Structure formats: structure tokens, C-alpha cells
Image 1: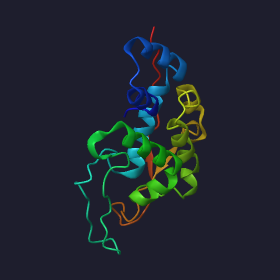
Image 2: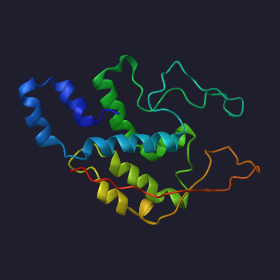
Image 3: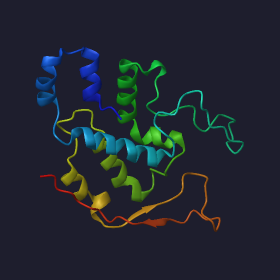
Image 4: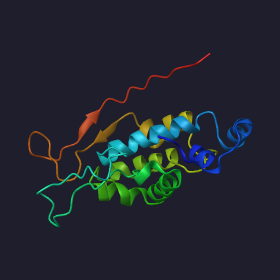
Length: 178
């Protein structure tokens, strides 16, 4: 889960002695981790790995328009080219709700996901200086309520044949590095 700030560093091919200065000017201590956490959150919301290769289509006879449910991961780019990946990142972040909807993942239009999508957008902020911090994320309404409810992806049902929500344990362990 390479954040856009590191891709930019790779794309501009900074000299080794300038890397520290670049990172000091363009990132925060938590920015890489929050980007990665946002990517994991996005994978959970979509139900598909972000780097699923284009060759690994997920077909389904249940889809009405006969198109594959998934034609590749949201961040998959041919050749693992940094420019292509950066373009995909910009597109996904700018169209987050639409991209999740098209993956057939969680119902991001439901009331319970209003705060979830907002938190994800703040974790996946392109500008690392504006990316949410861990403390801010824990205080975000999606996590601060103490109860996160998830529902199966569109079209899937629970064991009883209902789209009933499942409570998720949200106990959070905090760690202090000294």
C-alpha cells in the first residue's frame, strides 16, 4: 500500500541525499500508516483485493448485465508503473463512493456508512499533511460511537437468508512506543 507521497518520490527520482528532506517536507509521522489503514478499510468495503490483477476476473451468473462482478483491483495498474498507480489512486480517492458501489461491496449509500466513507476519505487523503492522524481517526464518529455495524455486500445474505446486520467488536488496543 504505497501512499501517493512515496510514489511521487519514486516518480521524481530524487537523489538519495534529498529523500529525507523530501519526506520531512511532504509527510507526517503517521501519514504512511494511515494511508495503509485506509487501503485495508477500502478492501474490506469492496470485498476485493486492491491489487487483484486484471486477469483475475470474478464472474458471476447472478449479475443481470452478464459483466464480470470484478475486473481487477481498484489500484491495479498494468506493469506496476508508478505513474499509472498514481493515476488510479487519484481516480479512486476522487470517486471513492462510486468505486465502492461499482465493486459491489458494502452498501455505502446506507446511513451507517455516511461516517465510514468520510473516515476512509480522510485516511486516503492524497496530501499527507492533511491525512487524518490516528488520534483523530479514533475520535471520528464512525469509530467513536463504540458500535460498528456491518452488512453483507450487495446481493449476499446472512445464514437466515436476510441482509441482517452483524455487530462487530470494536475494542481498540492503543500502543505507546517509547
